[in-house]
Structure formats: structure tokens, C-alpha cells
Amino acid sequence: MKKEWLLPLCVSVLALAFALTALFRHDGSGLPAEQGTTSTAQTSPNASDGATCQVKRVTTDQVAFYLAHQLGLEAVEFNYTVPAGVQLTAWLETYIDGELDEELSGHFIDCNGPERGDKPDSGVFSFRRYYPKYASESPSERCRWEFVPCNCGGVKWVNNPFRNLASWGRGPHTDIWDLKLGQTEVVYYHCGETEETQKEGMIGYPGHVDPAKEAEMIEHYDVCVFIKVRFDKARGPARLYISQPGLPHFPDEE
Image (cartoon, rainbow, N blue to C red; front, top):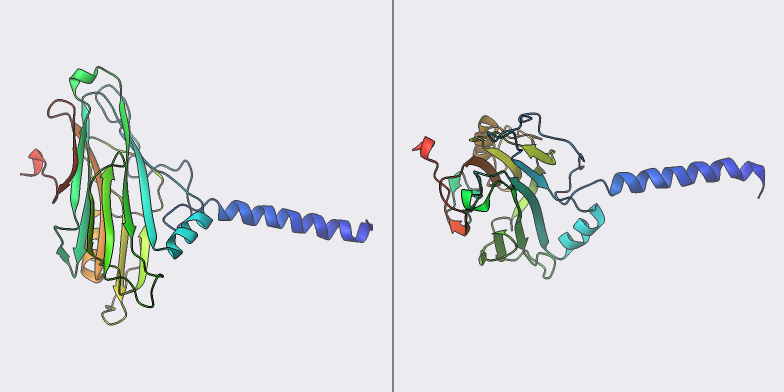
């Protein structure tokens, strides 16, 4: 090989490697994955024994996400760790035109009660939608809707709230959350609006959602879906409520 071709070839190979690395560091939300990044809003060990209450988003490569999306599949999955004597509550809140939709909302509780000993508990939960958007000339009116722990239960067919959205955003940008007891955190959102009802004062799609930002998003966007998590001291024996309808209730908020 001539020497004058050697340098351009090396540069091309390096550029290709860099591009592939950037591509596969994206997660299933379509946003860049910040591997190893912990939410700056919560960084302290949280249970009384110093163990960590943690939720971590499971990342997938962008190519797989894109191909699944072409088939009308959407999914986001999380791993979690619950210290002894602590329980996790995870729930899905769905707002349409600023109002909570009870049918599209739900929650579950995983309690690491005293009978499990002093070992931490762990598990997985996910939010999945199947809407055959590209299987016909128009978006599907109905979609399969799942918010499930342990990959079981909670499957139903509902009116597809995303069928007419012209623009949307997903987030946040954090991959790992270390939470204090009693602290609620939004670990996923999917919000959007239709062309007919695009509202003035677009706020964009934030990387972190606090209560004020959440209220603003609900007001501005036609559809908002939030996944939230919270850890509390265990309030009973070990149990797992699978996909209960509606939102959870916390004693300190009653």
C-alpha cells in the first residue's frame, strides 16, 4: 500500500470507531446514555444501616430501539435494589389534556420485610407499549399497555393516547438514582402534543423533572406519562402488589 493512502485510511478507521461508540451509547429512550451517572439531586446512602436504595435504567443500543420502534414497540426497563426493612413503590401517572387518566395509571409495592432477614432485595419493572403504528396507513386507535414488575401481569389494551402526537420527548438523562427514604423521583417521562393543539410557551423536554417542572409539562402538553419511584420504611411483611390501578397513597401525605 502506498504511503500516501495510509494516513487517510487510519483516519477513516478511527472516525468509524468513534461513530459506532457514540451510536451504541444511546439508551432505549432515544437519548444519550450517561453510563455511571447518578442523579445529582440524590447522592446519599439512605436506609438507616447505610445501604443504598437504588433504581437503575437498563440501557439498550440505539439500533435495536430504532428497529423496535418501526414495529410499533416501545419499552423502558429498570432494575432496583431495596435494603432490608425498606419498601419500594413504583407507579405510572398518565395525564391527558391536563387530567389524570386512572385507566392508564397504576402502581406496585415491593416490601423487603423483616422475615427476609438483613439481605437487600432486588427486582425489575418495565413500561411497555405496542402500537402497530407502521402496520397500516394510520396510527392504531388501540395499543397494548403494560406497567409490570417481574415481567408478569398488568397487560391490557387501551385507547392509544400517543396516536396523534406530532412532537414528543423522553427523559430524563440520568441512568442511576440513589434515593433517600420518602423522596419521590421521576425516572422516566414521555410527553407530547398534536399539531392541532400545540400550545404557546413550549418548555422543551428537561433532563430532570422536579414538581414545578412536572406541573408545567402537564399544563403544556396534551399527553404526559411519568414513571415515579419512592422508598419508605417497610410497613408490613414482604409482599408484592402487581399492577394495582390508580396512584399509591403514603401515610405522611394523608
